[in-house]
Amino acid sequence: MINRMSIAGRISKVVFLGLCLLATVFPLYWIIITSLKEPGAIYSLPLDYWPRQLSLENYIGLFTKSDFGQYMVNSLIVATVASTVATLISLLSAYVLARFEFSGRGWVMGAFLVTQMIPGFIALGPLYLMMSNFGLVDSKTGLILIYIAICIPFCTIMLRGFFENVPDALEEAAMIDGCSRLGALFRVLVPVMLPGVAASFIFNFVNCWNELFLSVTLMNSDANKTIPTALAGFISSFNIDWGSMSAAAVLTVVPTLAIFAFASKFIVQGLTAGAVKG
Amino acid sequence: MTVDTKDAAARPSTRRDAPGGARTSTGIKRRFNAKTALTLLAFLAPAAIFVGIFTYYPMISGSQMAFRNWNLNDLSDTSWVGFGNFQSLFDAPEFWGIVRNTVIWVVGSLIPQVVIGFAVALFLKRRFRMRGAYQAMIFFPWAVSGFLIGMLFRWMFNAEFGVVNDLLMKAGLIDSPIPWLAEPGFAMTAIIIANIWYGVTFFAIMILAALQSVSDEMYEAAALDGAGKVRTFFNITLPSIATTLALTILLRVIWIFNFPDIIFAMTGGGPADQTHIITTYMIKITQEGDYGKASALGLIVVVTLMLFAAFYLMAVRPGKAQR
Image (cartoon, rainbow over all chains, first blue to last red; front, side, top):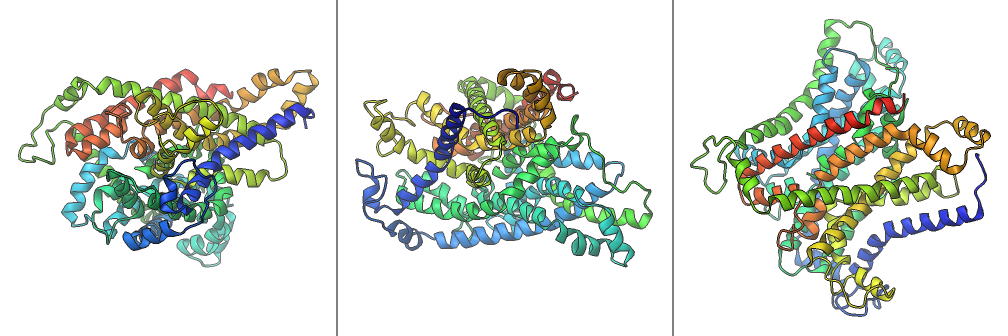
């Protein structure tokens, strides 16, 4: 403790942090409230900050009038498969980059980092052409393959940080006991750094769940569209139906919010570990 | 692509080799045999294959499109046109307005993000009850995609039924509703506000982590020497976290520059193309099918950002800042 905070300092702290929290949470509150109003009540003045009549009509309409249920299933499939595979692949590459010093390691890291700096749109056109050559336009498999590739670089970098916090001795002991390297990795190291692995997986999942531009470019049938593509469809029509829109937004955000809340501590750890050490 | 941009934001975690981030490697340094080498290659191969095919190949092939006549609407002639695509970009009457918008978008979003994020971090530095819960709550914008943030704010800034106008009128700050997204100046303000909302958390988290790595002894010594709060801040706090701050800002600039999602959802570049930044403009061109021109714009972005990063790093010299 350096010096005691004055009363005024304490009050300003509470007020400032309170305002920040209010500003952060309000948009979420507002979209939830909007989604729970009767469709007609959304467009009536004065605005109600609490719905006069709670109604699930927007949600019911979303599932009966559009294929939103199908979009949710599609997003769930694509995001789950892509982030699982990406996490497994990244575990392997991160392990190598964390544990071994070989010539060219800097280049591999560099090649991963560069992908994070270049605007993805430069690849959008060629990617579309390539996928159409493979016959993978409007296909979940195609989207999954691309998402895996997109997740790998950052996931590798994040996992590498977690590997470095685990002592070498652990897998050396396992290997002396007759474990293969792969066995040591998955049976000994992964359980130890499970929070880090979970955080990386969640980070991938949320990114895939939220990805918009590739999905919009590649997916065009209702059977394959993911949620963001469907949402983008909402704004291309002249009049936006804010009732369905807000219900869809709530259904999109709530799952990611729930898993982020669960994992935020580890994600923060993963993001900040490298930046401020030393 | 949201994935890319979000990841770019988080890149500081990779600055292990960065100056000031020197750390002892836990790597197994002893020489390894052929069998181990093969295992390593096998471990790296899947990642290399995926990133090579689905990231590098399209990027490189996209780059060469920039010098070709490459229009999806007419693929009969894909001849080499040199810098023709660049020329027609520079000649477009809207181009320099878009460049100006991009600068406003980056600077206007960045400065409030840094200032508010810094303040939040300073206040969060001292442990207090519910701090963990508070941190988890302000993390919330991160779970929302850029596109959805755009939609949320588009609804809140709605001229007729938007809550922003309603609150401003209730507070007596305005007499009649502002047509937020219909007037270029207001629209620019609105999209920047949405972006600030999104970005503050990142700075708060990074700066807080940096602050927590400054040793208490430094502060105790300063207090013994009779340094006041302001002097302590400028002589100890700021220099100690200068490296992290400088790198975080650089990454954010790159990231905000490449972040079209909010604008795409909120205004779509409108009204009358007045809120386009370079990347939303690039989406527009891509959607029109002119891949050649879009790729040329992409290359301009890459080169601009690389030059910026080089000059920035020379100017702030992050290595020196922290001795």
